[in-house]
Length: 226
Ligand code: IYR
Image (cartoon, rainbow, N blue to C red; front, side):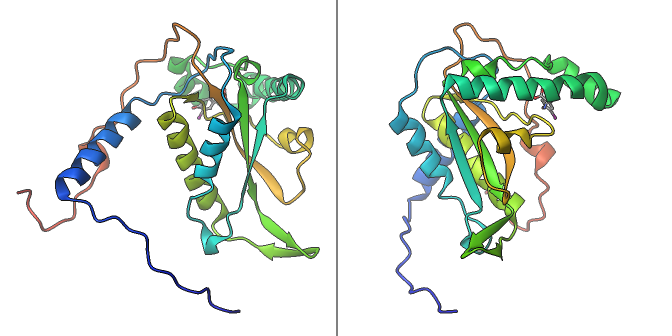
């Protein structure tokens, strides 16, 4: 295998105050992101949503294989088909498959098997992970596929929020029906379903709290703050 050519790194050295300012602004932005389950029918421009998906595609990935596909759905007929199939699985899950502990953990969030948002949101982004690639009819390996696609979804969610749109990370289970409905090949496995749009006016969200920094950060460092 030939090595890639190398090019100078495009890297911006920022003054420290600006670094901290940007980091704090980004934290503040991310703190205001919430999962939304009620969408208005306000349209989202194609250019905006496609720019956001391009951002997800900038994520790092194992051996740069970029093992992801983003299926963008706005067709009401397809959205309805997805809703019907998702609700069928979710009803079965909520009523028979999910253990009581799980149902108890979801109770405060008020979720159930009804998935109106799958039709209400102007766009659904269905993320697929490519468990292998097909090149000249041969199966080629991808690496760290779950990690890579998870990171790309992180970029995607941040880009959606940054653009002033709302989203939900929805994981109907099992979700293989998405491959059939969206006619994706056997090497692609559905990973996450993300409705995107504007929140319905007056949307209420659960008053949840994020863990504090001291709860999530374990410091093994020599430097004392100064
Ligand atoms: N997939 C189901 C259940 C569900 C599971 C978790 I973990 C959540 O944080 C939220 C919902 C659903 O979408 O309702």
